[in-house]
Length: 260
Image 1 (cartoon, rainbow, N blue to C red):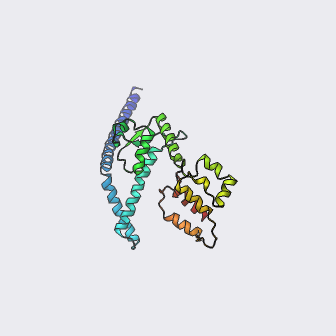
Image 2: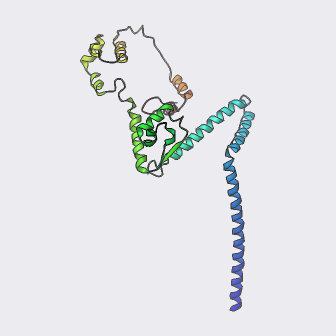
Image 3: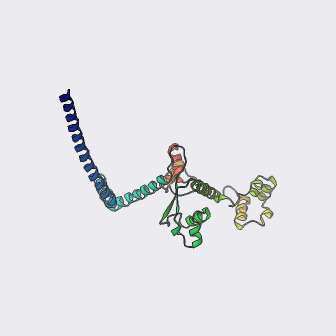
């Protein structure tokens, strides 16, 4: 009985020693991998340039019509969009249905006056800063993670964004009622612009152009096909904003795809 127990203990000790040796080997390999990963991260830009250069050479071999400069410019643009997408993805993380957890705003160091530096969390201060270059001139961004601040700034930003159309010609409540007033419409048709005396020059010219009675033959016709429209949408930049509502040409690209 004693001899059997000793054999079992001896076997366990040998097995334990073997496992310890395997663990030590694995730890050394992990340490080496971490060192390589750190080196790759530190020199990621150089590695990326090498990869892009190899990719350009492959593309040139596949298509002789392409040139190095053109391919480099195209891939650099792809890289820029890739980095922008990475920032947007991080700032718009939506785990499950919890909503946005964090946003980026200009860092206090981006402002010129002390008052703006103090009020850097105020949406009016942020809005005026972003209006200068649509955020492209901001070199340093600050991360906002407090949920109450994230919700407040997001809501205030959306209100500012969608409210840009408010106050533009013909968007006020006064015009909502005027444009459905039959008497007002009839006076404009008869080229009576007395109702527009206190309006801006742009609004007066707008209604005067509508009120002028022109023969349809005199009007210059313009016709374009669906293919013409789709071709224009295909070539325009997606990030171009087309209205204060925030719709951009990317939405219309989707529509043109569905229409095809």
